[in-house]
Image (tube, rainbow, N blue to C red):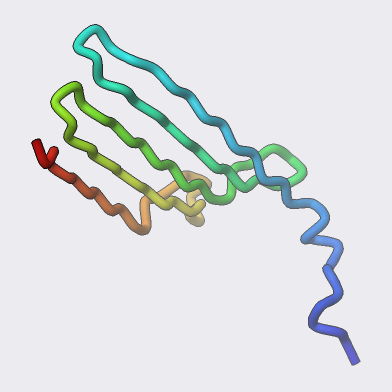
Amino acid sequence: MTDANTPSEDEDDIEVVEVVVEGTDDAGDVMIDDVVMVGDKDGNVLASDETIAVETADGRVIVDEKVSVRGDDGELHVVDETVTEVESED
């Protein structure tokens, strides 16, 4: 009988990496790009979750999140994307 909570050898070969980049443009807009990638021991990216958040100088906030998974062709394909925009209350 196999214990469902026991990690398999395959799970030990998975690595999660997160990269966050922040910046401000000349107009005063602030951008944050947060990418989380799941990869295997050979360096292949299996899935990613990228969230880009922008706060504009006039107070609007725009958030774009994309979730992608690796297809049979070896390429990442977007399986879900959500874009949210909130206007400034000023």
